[in-house]
Image 1 (cartoon, rainbow, N blue to C red):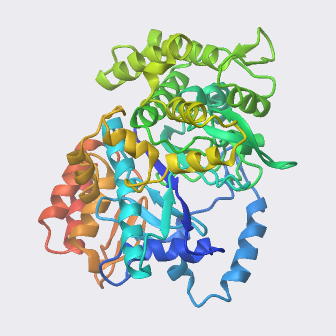
Image 2: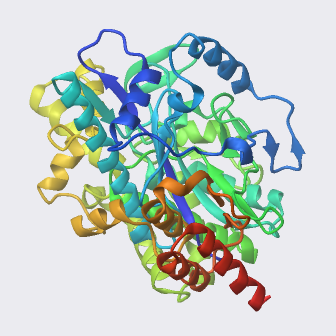
Length: 509
C-alpha cells in the first residue's frame, strides 16, 4: 500500500483574563494573529460533503447539522462574514490553519514518513503558540493559553484526527472488521491520560485515572457523525482524492499526544494494520461490545481489565495489541526500515507495559502523566479527587514552553525525541518534498497573490488564461510530485506551470 497520512489537531483555547470566553471569536482572532499581511486566500468548501457515508449511502442529515444551524443564528449577530469567522489559511508548509468554529485547528500537510509527520505535528504547536504570543502582545498580557488535549473537563471534547490514504479496492466492511478491535485497544499505547470520568448522566467525576481522554465520548461503533453520536470508526466518505481509487480513513477516536514516541506508534501501528487488512492477515477478533470495551480498557491503568469477544476468551487491551503485533511481525517484517522500526518499538512497548512501565516515562503520555501526578499526590499528601490534579492534567498539555508540564520535561531531556529543532523549523517553512502537501506549500510561497481558492486536492489560480487549475486528486507518486514541484519552481506564472504540467502528463499517458 502507498503510505500517506496526516494529523488534524483541534486545540483547547482560553482567556485567563475573562470570566466568560467566546471560543468562536477567540479562535478566529488567534488564527488571524498568525497573519503578517492582509487575509486574502479562500478555502473552497465546495468539495467537502460530510453527509457521504463509506457504507455506500448519503445521509439526509447529521445530528451536528442542528448545532451548526444554531451556531449560524448566533453568528449572524456577529460583525463577521463566514470567511472572516473561519479565517482559513493555507500555510507555506502546505498545512491548513483555521477556526473550526470553537477551536483553532491545525491540519498537517500529507506526510509519507513518521519523521516528517512528527516534525509537522510539532510545527503545529509552534504555529498556534506563536499566534498566541502575537495575540497576547495586543492584549497586554499572557492571557490566551492553548492546550493540545481533548477535553475541558466540563463535558466538552474536541478532536485529534489521524488520517490515512486507503485503496478503495479494500471493501469497507473488511476495514471495519480489521480496525475495530485494534482501535479499541490502541489507547494502551496512544492514550494521553486523564484524571476523572466524564459521563452524560453525571458530568465530570474526579478521582479515577484513565488511559484516554476520548474514551468517555465514544458512543457507537460506526457513524458518519463526528460531533454527536461519536463513533469508534468514522464512516465519512470524503477522500480528498480520486474517488474511484482511494478513500480517506478519518479516525476521530485518537487522543492528542504530546510525546513524539506515542504519536509515532499511534500512526505507525495503524498504518501497519491497514497493510495487514490489505493482505488479509489481521487476527480473528470480534468484540461483543466495542463501545463498552473502549471505556473498560481506558478506566484500568493497571491494564488488567478484559473485554468480551463474541466468540473466544475475554482479552485485555494489551493482549489484543499483542495479537495484532504478532500478525504484523509475521507478515510485514523486512518490508522497509520504518516498518521494522515500528515493529521493534511496538513489541518492546507492549513488553514494558506489563513488566516495567517506568521505562516508558517520556515516551507514552498516559504513563508520563500518571508518573507526574503520582509524584505530586505523594509529595502534597492529597487525594485523587483533589481539583488540583485536574489543573495539573490540563497544564501537562499547555503548548506554552514556560508553563507546559510536558514541555518542561522535554526541556530537561526526559522525553524521547525523533525530531530535532532543525526538523521543526524546516517543517514550519516547507512541506514534505515527496507529497502534494509540499507542492501546496510551494504554490503558497511562490504565487501567494495569484491563488483564488484551495482544497486538499486542487489549487485554483486567478487570471484569465484557461489552464489555471492544478488537479492533485491522483498526485501521490513521489517522483511525479517532485517533477511537478520542479515545474512550479521554474515557471514565471502559475498558468505557465499548470500548462507545462498538463503537457507532461499528456506525453506520458
